[in-house]
Length: 218
Image 1 (cartoon, rainbow, N blue to C red):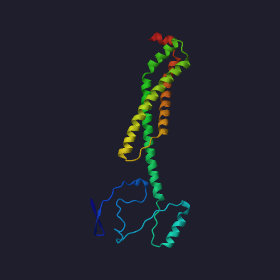
Image 2 (tube, rainbow, N blue to C red; image 1 turned 180 degrees about the horizontal axis):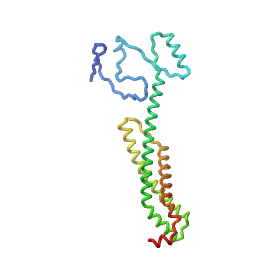
Image 3 (cartoon, rainbow, N blue to C red; image 1 turned 45 degrees about the horizontal axis):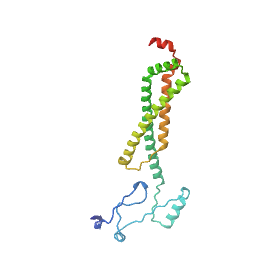
């Protein structure tokens, strides 16, 4: 296969020797098309180079180069890279905020479901009291129940969230996806904390209920 390019009115036909994949996210100098040496030597062209230097030496290096080469233009990209980094950090913060809100909403929904079964838990606590269970045993039983619910909710959320995140990052954004164990652990801790607090707050009154009066009403 060949490719024809118009360079300053002159058509240059080049044979496609190879294909390559460019990682534009590296922000390095790169070109979509590269000719063999000698093809464009006679065409007007400019040379470019990249230099990485400590920020404290940038002014001295720039002054030294411009004094020796009057026709050299120096373009600082540090500011542009810092601006791009700030934008990416902002996007990351927005994604993390949305994920946190989603986790919070899911935990509140779970807390609402726990609150809906409050009356049944009050009845169960009274039965435990009749059977001789102490307040601490009832509290531990409730904590175990809420921990199981929290773990199940966290597991489902992590699996679904990971699959959706991997799909979006891999195929939509075409970026390298990385598994974040820290985010997973934080999600589990937050979900368990909210579930246990909401569950105990909704059933705490069961511990102060008189067994006789409650059973009489039932």
